[in-house]
Each structure stands twice: as structure tokens, then as C-alpha cells.
Length: 189
Image 1 (cartoon, one colour):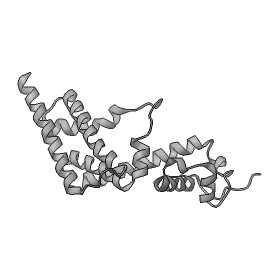
Image 2 (cartoon, rainbow, N blue to C red):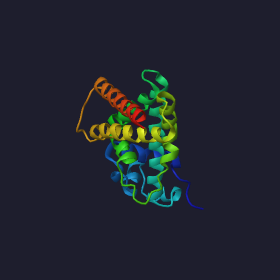
Image 3 (cartoon, rainbow, N blue to C red):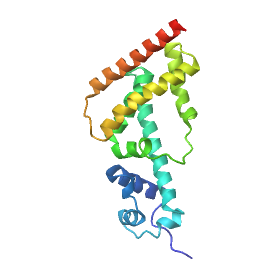
Image 4 (cartoon, rainbow, N blue to C red):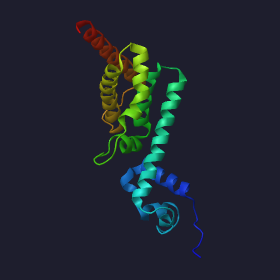
């Protein structure tokens, strides 16, 4: 009978997530993870079939943390809900730089991206707050997300160090600008 593993699957995932937070996903090797857990790498492979599986679990754990940021900021009531989601995205980029890079700046070649499922709540918020139809709201959200993603990327890579108030003002300006453009589009149609 093989010896009982010294740690649980969740403990391995947490250690791997912590390593990613500190030094990026590239730092999570079987050897380094084993050392972090005070072991060789062998017990890791009694819980996971490969390091690729460990990396997928890190991504899942990072997504859950990101969703927690969204939930907190959207429920706080400090900003309108749509703006709060953008502020949370940028706050996540600032506070969890390596996890942000992992989730939103990695090569997605070969991945099946479920854009519609992830965008749906934002599109509905935009439809409710602007009166745009579904197609327009999707276009609006995509353009606004590119704007927000730009800020977040510059913050995650330490290119910018803007204060929250500056970011808030710029998001408001971007939102109002897009809303105005879509209103003008409606008038000329």
C-alpha cells in the first residue's frame, strides 16, 4: 500500500496559487512546488496527473478570486454596477498583478473562450442603463472593455500608477463618450 499523502489536493492548489501570486505561473514547477510543500515532487503526482492539470487548477482558483473582487465591488454600492465591475477589474490588476497576467494576458491560442457567457451580465446591465439593444450593448461593452483592459494592463505591468479617483473619472468619461456616440448613431440611423 502506498504511503498516505502528506497534503490534500486543495493544499497543493493553494501553494501553487501563492507561488503564482509571488512570481508568476512560470515559477510553478513540480520541484519548486514540492519544495514549497516540504516534500519531493512525487506526492504531487499522486494527486494530479500532470503539471498541466495543476496549472488548470491555478487558473480556476485565480478566476474564483477575481470573481470575488467583482462581487465585493459590485455589491459595495460605491459606483454604478457596470462601473464597479471595471473598477474591480483594475483593482485586481493592481493588487494581484501575476494572477491578472495569468487570467487576462496569457496566450489563448487553442483555448475555447466562452465570451458570450462571460459578457452576458455586462451586456444586460448596459441594455438596462442605456436603452441600447442587445447587439449595440455587446459592441458598447467590447469597446469599453478594451478601454478598461488597457488601464488594467498598464497597471499590472507597472507602466502606470494612477490613483483610484483618476481611474474612476476616466472610466466615467469613457462610458459617457461611448454612450453619447451610440446616442448619435441612433439619431442618424
